[in-house]
Length: 290
Image (cartoon, rainbow, N blue to C red; front, top):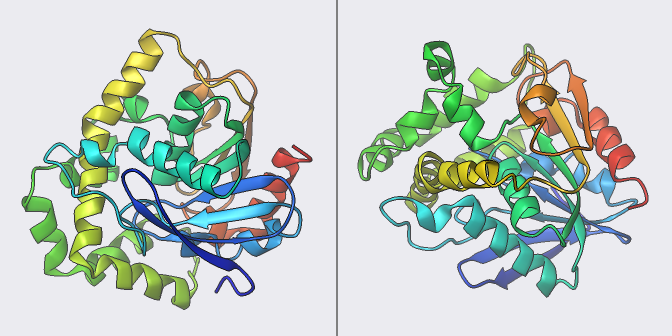
């Protein structure tokens, strides 16, 4: 996996980021989501690296990256903190401006990066998400059942950590099977990486902190930006899997940015793994010559 990619381990103000990189050209940052690692991009990154300089990290606390010691409210793992760490990583690699694609929690880091560092991000692709504030505000009983992990994983420590620690492999399989599309099979090697990461207590603690931040500081930051009419300046591509998110994301993101486009694939949540060719083509067309 990630053959011919360079391996880097970089220290930021808050984290120690493990990443792989390959290719030449304009830099593209790929961010994974929960409950995964950078292995989620293993089918797409090599294809994009034919045209771009592709950087694929594990998010702080996920995979092989180390994050800060989680605070009680999860603020240590806010998307603002993660976004700042990613900007530091890109600066360390010599990239002052770049494009970014983020899936799931990585999408939240990506759009926060575009809000907080508009001079850094010149193209933004978000996959299968709405903003955090909109997700919470639209959570009626049906959405709460569908996305029960949002309030569950945001509960105070050590409840979440002990629940996840009881059988992490079972919970990982539950999430992957629940969210993937009909008939989809994820690469066993990638799933083995997700499983190995989730078996580690410090990774589970980081995941819980991530969701606590989502229920607290991330929601508050989104609300403050919305109230101040501080929105995303760069062009945005929205990608969704129809079997996971049947509704258009355009309405949800209208008002957060102006240059919006949407791609829809007939798959579940794991777009880069279920539809790697379509994901690669959509991202390459969107990034263009940047």
